[in-house]
Amino acid sequence: MRYPGGKEGGGAWQKLVNEIPPHRVYIEPFCGGAAVFRHKRQADLSILADLDQKVVMAIVGTSAGQVLPDLSALLPSLEERRGRLPAPPVVGVAACGSSLLESYPFTGDEFVYADPPYLFKTRRRGRRVYRYEMGSADEHKRLLAIARRLPCPVMISGYWSDLYAQDLADWRSFSFRFMTRGGPSVEWVWCNYPKPKILHDPRYIGADRRRRQDWRRCQSRWLRKFRTLEPARKRALLDILQADLASIS
Image 1 (cartoon, rainbow, N blue to C red):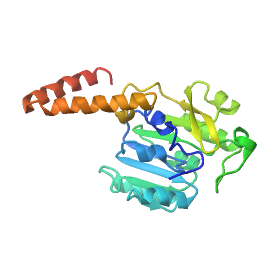
Image 2: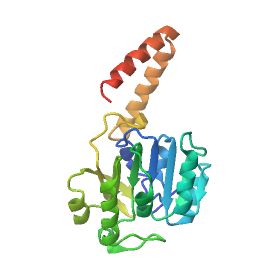
Image 3: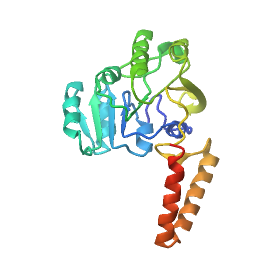
């Protein structure tokens, strides 16, 4: 799905997926085209929100998920899922992303990726491109204040601005270049957690396309060798790997 400001092309979604730590619940409060959600390994539960109900329907409907009309319907739905695996594992809600983050009952096993409509002053000619906009400094200040209170890993992407640089000065940040429909652009990312040692989805490891291809070849080669082992050696190797993994988690 092509979407203004989306992360579908230019290696953008791969770079973001490579910054996501393990989590049980994935929350994207401004889903738009939801490129990161569509490409990453699915969480036990994913919650996608957008004020534009048509956008939510387009994304969640293709994932065989449940679409809720507003925030008031979300919390009872979550209560019904408590203590069991969610079915369906994807929930969409037509709601303000900031309000969702304010009302959601966080437990700490969530991961939030926020890619809100960017500040008007950071856009080319300050143009409006969405049915529901969020271009004012006050709206973004509210979002950042909420994000800073969340008890879970949070990643926010956008164009660089004094507001973000000041309000998220103590967060880890990095930037990368990618191609948009309007030409080359520089995306900035802010995270309230250190670079993860273990990824939720390690399939796209690599700083660029060539390195990601090398990693896929490595995976295929290792898997072929693993499949040639007898069951006892497979079990022994898995035990060794799990013990080593525990030392870095």
